[in-house]
Length: 189
Image (cartoon, rainbow, N blue to C red; front, side):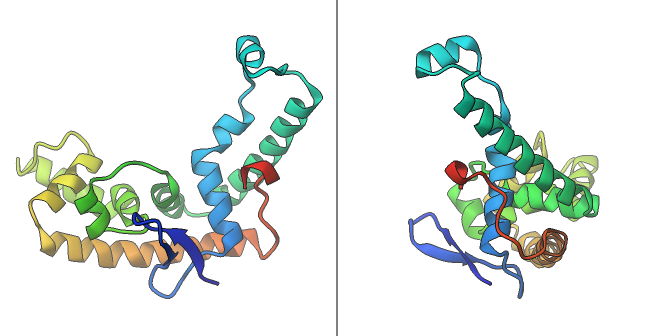
């Protein structure tokens, strides 16, 4: 199944890695888990409840947190059954972060985050540091630097490597999650 996502222009696109696209349920779960789950399960302070006009211990709030905790545990358990490299790639794909427009163009659909998380790119970063070929303070800055310098040789290699790794990671998550509905709480979906 192909999953529509919004690209930077606001148009619907399909996130696809080689011949693998995540199901809508997997897409929703991973996006929610890596970006919203922590906030959904966090118990607000009494002051936050006062400002929001509800008690952090109201029945609705307790039920909402319980559903979020259940969903997060279920997704966490699934992720723990994956190889650590697959988990890192999924975190890279689905963790929302700001990249420059040039990076988004060179490595679209989460590939920039996956590149940052990939072993190959991390090794290349360490190699560049050892050879004093970069001043980047971290892997994300190194990815930005490679794009800014127009290193097409590295970008082509990274894209090929990362697309395949992402396809394998998505397929692995789909295997462990099965074909049931998304576990993301309704109000967060």
